[in-house]
Length: 370
Ligand code: ARG
Image 1 (cartoon, rainbow, N blue to C red):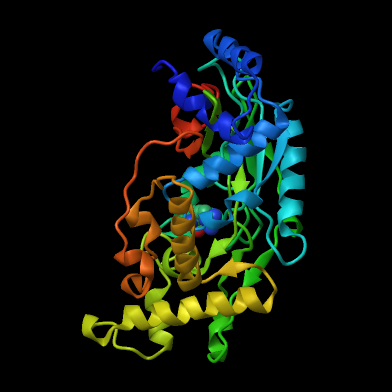
Image 2 (image 1 turned 30 degrees about the vertical axis):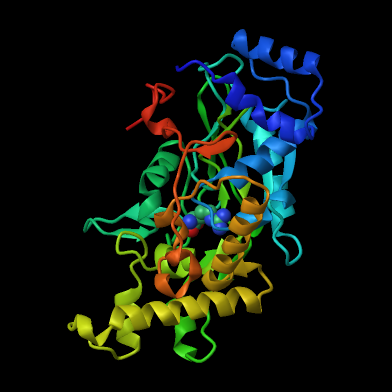
């Protein structure tokens, strides 16, 4: 592992303490890191680390709201049972009322740098099973095929009649790395059935999605410490569901179905059947979430908010790291201001990072039945 760049890693503490960080405190943190232990941050420091990580995250268009992040300091928890209880609370907190609260829950980091680490094996706390069928096709979300198969091996029983939107259980591991199955009752997850404001048949497609995306597979890095189990959520932007999850050919692939119901010529790309189907699907997403009082932002508003975020950061003299290909919405790109804005990405800390899936690391139990 590369040596920790202390100067860069601890710079955020100055901001968190408004420039008045006591010197002994800094020395204490430096000593812990030098010994390979997690940085002994206070809960207040951890909260700022979380907020600044959100502010720094180059793929997120929703960063105007970074100061509103609530951070739950759960660094004393690392067993699957304790994590599960805390995750149920996270889920409950973000779904109550109609304003989705942004929350980060931070579990124990590895006790020594690079040592065994608590993990949530699900990429998100809510997700739908993907079952491989006899004919090779997938029922449900193809993105979760491996997780679904692995959950079954751990003893999960899918509903008697498997469907396209079966919620997956959680798979959690503590410091010993051994994965434990935690059932997720479907009542615990708020979901929205998709309806269209003008097309009555749309409801019969049986499409739905869950209310809140809670990312649980990423690593939160702050002050030289990697928190491998640190789930966080914002609220959805409509296109994530309407132009990607339900539309991508390698996900739910619904455009041909919708275009057929719209009586469009799906043999001719110039009929713009994909574009028209996308538009109706996205309108259904915006309409249905609003009708159920679940907060979700449209891509035009999100783009405007991101432009305000850029202005504010500039006023404060801070550079913004951003990836154009992630910030520009997947439909109507050039109709949003972000399309016409040059963006560049550079490393930041604190931040959220991808990490190898536990399926491919040595924590994979040898005893797993095939
Ligand atoms: N794109 C992911 C999904 O569709 C969620 C990523 C995070 N999104 C968010 N709005 N915070 O489930």
